[in-house]
Image (spheres, rainbow over the protein chains, first blue to last red):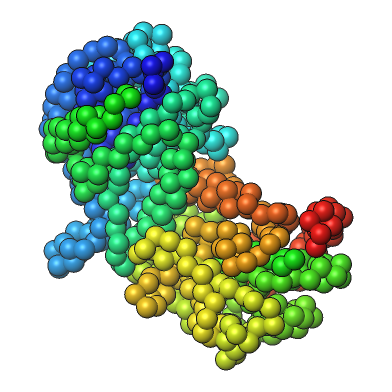
Length: 285
Length: 280
């Protein structure tokens, strides 16, 4: 793979940040990357990498952001347990009911639970007025265009706006309007943005950060719907993964929740170690 | 050559399958085996048992008369012009969504299925038939082709969130449409040499007013993508579009049937040519 690889990064929610570790391992291995295609928070890590900046700065920034905004993000970490209702003691059950109801009502009455005020300033402060032309490695950010109902790859213009579209997880953040498009994150559709890649992009190397799988009887309607949603995403991922020439599955990250922002440093170091080990056993990258 | 017919999910629009079967019967195309998901399993099971389209129409009429089919239409009370009622309904739905496992029980489903299939079993059908469901614990498609037809078809119509999943032999089964809307692959694995897939066209709502609209929209994109991958594996496709038809209105079977008939008649010359090409 001398001409360089197309690196595909995914991961639901905060798990996408683990790709900071993946990219550090690839840097150490001196793997040649001709293009990065990323979705969700992995696009933020990829942007920092593509700008040629220190990835540790991003880690520190993210840890500080989540620590400072714990109050605003109250319950986000616990929302990730929305489909995991195995702790059913009285207090837990009541809290579970309230969280599900809140999620349900917020999404019935508005476009999302959170607004852009929370993170737009942070992205602006971190990436400033950088555009795609400032990147040293070409980057494509995956999103779903609600107007056309298709996955799109954003490869030009203001980096901050496109990153917002990449992380606009439906239900959590409102869609982002860019020109004639209305964009949301593609991670809910498929964790790995392989849909738009073709022969020209070969060799394609996908980094699979698997999601926790809930093998239990759904306790509520939201549970049931989330379960089917998860099944469909997994089925789409399995089919799309056949497009990749090589898949590195970071199994050790499976048990982390999608909103485990308190565990960002662990996620990154675990991803680094696993990727480093996988690269050691593979001579052609 | 064994011709297989694969029928997909789609609620009350599935009555259109009766029209499809009538058109195929008139054209003398012999179906060797049938499978289906959701309403496709009901229609496929009924036809494979009786091999008689007229009987299916009379069963439809009888079910509409004797079972409260409109009960299945959970969105029958429009609240668009009543903001107070809408707010109240939203709160009620959120309470139900957080507390209950499903909106409806299987009571009326069982009543309707027993009217159609009685005590008949899969081995009583005149042509091989299988019902397709999804096991949400094992995350896989399950083909049911043994036991009582009522018991085998019930899991396939358990629309997640609306009806409770069906527990059977350690499996937790829901509507086959969750993964395999038109279960073409399953039918081929069962021995069908030429598969005709029948898909009920769905209108995807591209406007959104709240977060749930967006979540639903993304889910419908996934559903369509998975359906298309499955249908592309068929040897021949029939698509039925029924404009402005409410999928919950099972009493409108007389409107849906002609759409299936007309859609099949339109593509019949192509189907006959394809069948001639493969020597069927």
